[in-house]
Image (tube, rainbow, N blue to C red; front, side, top):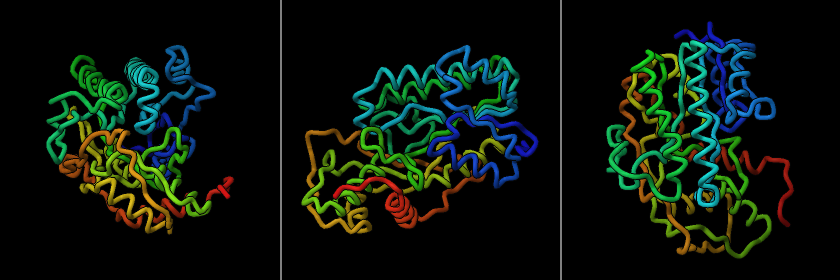
Length: 317
């Protein structure tokens, strides 16, 4: 598919990942007027009439569906119903209307949380249905997983070209640093930078530190999504990852070092670790559409810290 000739709707295009996807589309030559971002104030994507109006007004030929209600372990535990309902409704109605409006391509973005809690390492796409997701984020993970079911069902019955991607945890400049909804890297960066500035004697980190995670730099993720939209037309789900894992304890030590925080790290073992390990097999994405992550993790982490330190926000004193 030559995206330069298409009208591309990017749901969630004003968000963390979405802004980078829009920039990647521009870099690939898609005219700015052909990159369409439905804003939440104008279109409630959980309401069918609003979704229909968006398709009528924007007339897309391609949809990249990034919009989601997301958060870390705390937000998932506090709002499981909200996360399930809104993510399920957005995906189901967007894909149905895309089918009815004869959109050429629908790129659905899933989540690593869709995998079973005890998936063999590295996570391979064929293990996606081998168990129940980790409990703290299962409602979110299952809602997003239904996009895969819908995409495969629509391809089978309607010959609708929908693909499904599974990005691992993202990080990078522009991330969400709100402690009520942020993921692990921005949450730790904020704690360490703010703690350094305020002279806090300690910071508290959830869990034991033994869980492992894999992190994908957001610009790499954006490139992978655009590559898949251009080159991949299959029914199989595809992981998007960097191919490495790091324990939370090691991650905390790196962020403490890079931010210059001098205080104590206190581990709150009463809080959950989440999924025990995360590491993706990334061979399918390389084979199907030529994607491999390029950004060194240490470099990406330093850039994310610099971004947070550069923000014009009120700092603790």
